[in-house]
Structure formats: structure tokens, C-alpha cells
Image 1 (cartoon, one colour):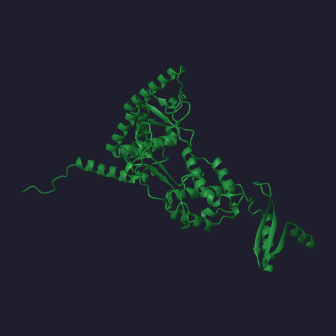
Image 2 (cartoon, rainbow, N blue to C red):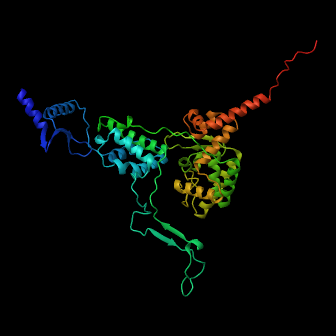
Image 3 (tube, helix red, strand yellow):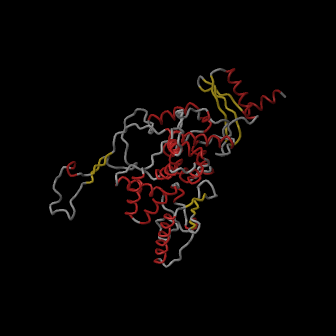
Length: 432
């Protein structure tokens, strides 16, 4: 029996001499991901140690404690992203991080070979330089295809060119636009971005553990950067007034979009999903559909906002009459399609808003309007639970953490109000 067991062990595993080292190889079944034969391998230079390794690997296979797949991180992460419950914007962001940072570093690496130290070094590299240049000088090309690294878009006078062509000119004086591939300069990736990347890697390994592809999750032990302190920068009331005016000067639909974000604080992904069936004019309610939940949250609207939305509805119905089509309740409020059957592109909205603010000299981004809505409500004395409900936060803890400074300011104002309404009694004794 002992000889049969030894023979069976040799069939399942082997020790091969490769130069000065010994390679231990144990058959572990069929890889469920690749469909190929799966082997566990280790190396040593000591013969006795090689036998102990062979025994240990055989035991791991017998007790099913080994990694079940040699699948790569790219394959596992793509599977995790496909089934994870993520909002549209979060999913887009994660896919961008995967393409730019994770796949170039670990995309083709088998999950079982990724170690804690590799992740520690990866995060540290990103915090030094997002390109992970390792100190090597190089040019950052504008495009991947063949191109000239320096091109000039000459600034020409209006009209047809003269018969003899344009005369020579000084590009710097004339204001010609020069485009060239610049030398690389290191820029660290923000802590918040590295944290998102860490969460993606950890989520992928957790899923791989559940699927029995790997035995452990190295991201659990990796050193990740501390979470940055929230620093919302909403526009001031004066800037908000300028932004609204500039938006309406462009066109009524764009003005309505900016107005709606400012008064409701909806996220960009929620904004583009709003349909006419979500607007209740009689009850003055807007149903906002969150990307992670099927249940909408309901936001009360003021009279002015209802009037703005009525004008937008009239504009939509007029456009449909021009097309000789009936208006539809499932049409989107904001769309580039003539029939409003497709939502606006989220990135296009963001870029347009940024360009508009830059044109009027205000440094702002679309998400800052969400911060404006929250901070104005808090400073007006609205309770945190109500503000959290309008923003779609799970509870008031998130709201208080993000807007701690404004909560403190509102608390100070409340103290001033109470103090101003009370009169301190005169404690001096009246003369006898």
C-alpha cells in the first residue's frame, strides 16, 4: 500500500532538476477560467526541502486549499466590474482607472502571483508620479499614432489669402497656437484616486476568493493612503447669481439645467436620467432615480422651479409639434436628440459648464453646484436629516462629515439667535 501511495504521489507531482535548483510541480486539476491544466510549482536547491514542499503541495490539493485558477487580474477585474453594484459614473470612473493605471501594471499578472509588497510599491509609485516614470525622462506624446511633435496653427487674417500667399510673420507676436509634445514632468496621483484604485483591487480579490480562484486577498494587508479630508468648494451666492445669468444667456434649456442642479443638488448621473414622468407639477415633487437603487427619492420643488419646468415642458412640446409627433412622458428633460429619447452625455454637460464658468472668470465645476445647494440649506437652518435626504446620502453622518465647516457655522448662528433673544437679569442689589 505504501508503494502504491508513493507511486500515486509521483503521478500527481514531480521534482525536476533545472540547473542548480529543483522544481516541484503538482497537478491541481483543470483551471475553471482558462480550461487548461493547472499546476502548483515551487523551487528550492535543497533535496530534503523539495520533498517537504512536494508533500505540502499535495496536501493543499487534497484539502482544496490551493488557488483554483491562474487567471489574470484583468480578467478577474472585468468580471467583477460587470457584476458589481455601481452607479453609472462610478463604473465609468473605475473603468478609466483600470485602463490607465491597473492594467498596465498588473493586467497580465496571474492573481495568485500578486503579493502585498507589489501593491505597496504600486501605490507608492502612483503617489510619486501617476505615470510611474521611475525617474526616466521622456516625451508625453499627444497621440498614440504617427504625428509631428510640434505643429503650429497660424493665426491668419479673415478673408482669402493674398495672391502671393501670406507674408512671413512672428508666431509669438501674432498669437499663433503652437502644439508640441512636452517633456514629462511628474505629477502624483491624488490620495482619493489611489484609494479608489485600492478599493477596485481589493474588490476584485474578494470576488476571486469567493469564486475560489485565490486563497487570500493581498489588498487587505497593503498600506493604502489615508482618506483625504473633504474640502467642498461651493460658489458664493454672488457667483451663483452670475452662473445662473450666464447659463440663461446661452439658452433657456441650458439655463434650466443649471437652475435645477443648483436648487436640488442632484448628481450629474441622476440629472441625465430625469424624465417628464418624474416631474409632478401638481404636488411639486421631483422623483430622482439613483443609479444604485430602484427606489427614487422625492425632492420637493419651490414655485419658481415649477414655473421654470413648465416653460421647459412648453419648449419640449413645441419641438414635438414641429416634428408632428406626440409628446411622451418617458422623454428625457435634457437631450441632444430631437425626440428627447436619449439622455445627454454626462461629460459634455461637465465640459460645457466648465467652459461657461471660465468665460465669466469663475473657477467652478458642475459638482460644486451640489455643494452650493447643501451649504445654503445648512446655513439657512434646515436640519441635517432633511439635507441628507435631498442629496441622497444614506444618513446624516456623511452630510455632517462633508459639510462639517458649514454645520459648525450654522450652529454658531443658532447660538447667536438664542443669545440675542434672551435678556440677562440685573444681579446687582437694589439700594436699601
